[in-house]
Image (cartoon, rainbow, N blue to C red; front, side, top):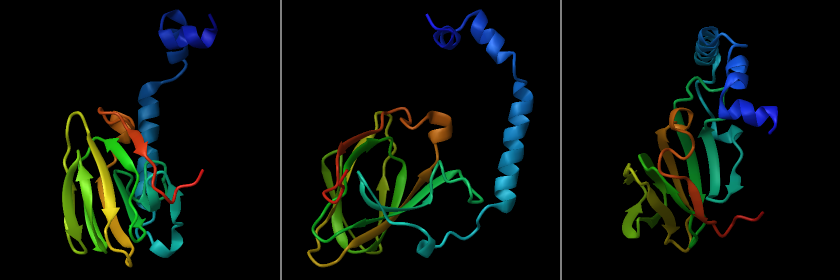
Length: 178
């Protein structure tokens, strides 16, 4: 068995590795980094400065993300998504607890197989459920791109990306190409 595996499983090797650091000082260092981020981070995130990413969920522009560290806050996830006319997002299972503001277009969202219609100006609330929810968005307009923004707490640092329910891509958006 390698030393790395022994260390991961515990015992004297792990104890020795843990003894190499002062974890109180590490906590203080994290605090100091967070204070700098709050003091020097970007206050206004401009849409024009963000790329439109094509990913398994579709077309997204990330304003706040767990790995974006140059904003004043990192406690929220915030993105804009676009769904081309007649298309749909990917289908995803996640914890829920997300709020979506529809900016343009009309369509519907399936939440655990139940259809919820919406249009520009509506707010869609994705419920927080212990076993998670399955969600997919559909653009029913043949001519107008749907645009919405979504936000949720950044639980990934305290509950891991699975957020207690699992986080699985169940279907890719049609525009996604590997």
